[in-house]
Image 1 (cartoon, rainbow, N blue to C red):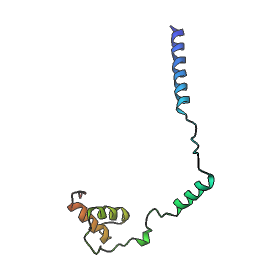
Image 2: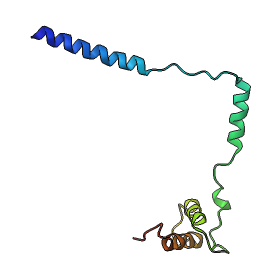
Image 3: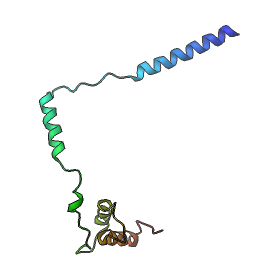
Image 4: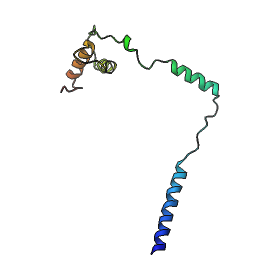
Length: 105
């Protein structure tokens, strides 16, 4: 009985080790690109601003009624603002509540 248990445990370990070895894939080396091309692409991507700086975001009320997509964008841009302190976020909040996209607590 003990011999079969040792054999079964050994087979389980061999199977697990085989699964680990087969799951490790070699790193794919891109063909046709040079290091200089990759460096230029990385520099170009680094120059693209991810989001407008906080100083560029206006906190005053918008001069036109916001559409739902604009309201979503405004809520994301004014994430750190509160509805009571930021007129722009308050206007976006009202639009999203009226559209049924946001439920007030």
